[in-house]
Image 1 (cartoon, rainbow, N blue to C red):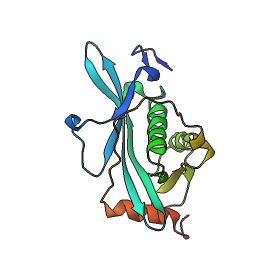
Image 2 (spheres, rainbow, N blue to C red):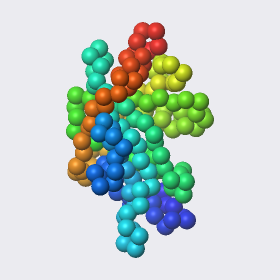
Image 3 (cartoon, rainbow, N blue to C red):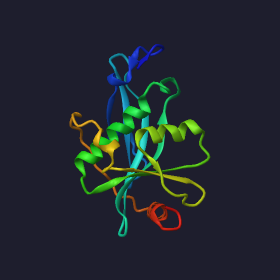
Length: 177
């Protein structure tokens, strides 16, 4: 979709992992970015999503997604959809041992839940006070992910945060999921 005020659309953005020089928050997570490369102004990050691997012996290895952000001027232009679709596609292609992705939603508006559901996330339990959503890489939605993406340098860091593993276990425990 064309951004009238900006003169660019989501297909003209570069999608990649954050570079070390761009100052990642922690070693145990990474950011996937939507970047506008402009000859006059250099690069501008217009969207980001934090991610990291979590492994739980009973449920396998999953990617947690946290903090999907898009700059105000780029909202409702397909940036979040394009960014998440590409991130999920890269992970599915490059790491076949990863079962899927998960995220937590608080008291979000209905359109936020609808956004994730349209991408293929399914509500799965209620760990703590959040709604848990999972995206399985063996689903029909995952089969439809793009397969012809350009190669990028990408690593999947494992998180050491015990909370992330507890959330994953809660998502799949018989009492919540």
